[in-house]
Image (tube, rainbow, N blue to C red; front, side, top):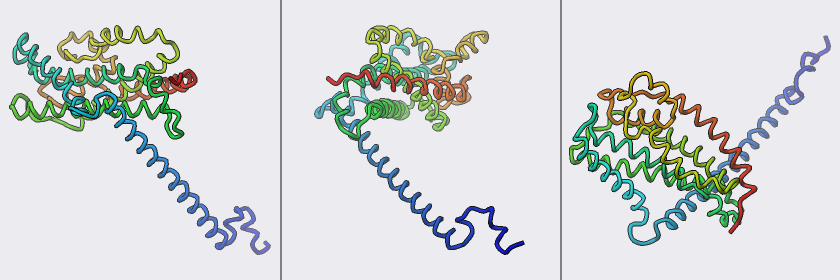
Length: 294
């Protein structure tokens, strides 16, 4: 066998160590360049989202008076009023769950759901003027509003909880990680629905007339003011087809713990979120061609 014939089947860059080192160095250089480009793009996206979120706060609440604080105070005040009303009507507890726990968990999740869907209406159209900026995309305006509503309402929940805990009206949180997982699962579901609604509003203007009535119809499907364990077992399967009921039950499990019987399937909600988000992104891609700059 001729010398070196065993290397004939190898790639050329493996035949000598010098060539191999050169190729490795070149590949490393390419990876570093790609990493730098990705890092710059992420920094640009972060700055854009930060700026758009601040703009959203200023536009909605103004620069003076309470400003962003009102984003937290509004759900807090409404939750407190509902809590007082339910306590007067039903007493301090219902089916072994205190009214404070029931209303705080249910109304906080309902507020997140309602704000995400309703605030996204015509989000593309109202922010179309920002698309003159080269780095701003329609999705950036959606994400800025999503972060504002999701984290603003979450802060409102923790402020409410802290006040109630100090007043000794509610026990410590049983599992904060379970509670947060439920919150962000509902936020993901709300984002997908809101994105679909925004796209439909651009594609077919009369659709916005149906959104408000549909939001009222979905209130029983949120599970905000009841628990699955209170219902006959024959209805449990049908109720748990609603992703919102799953997340509210999961949220209550995180706050209350095993003292209240809860039913939820996070993997089901995650699968629904993935498919619904994919559908919403397809709608959004089509809706982008219908955006009118005012």
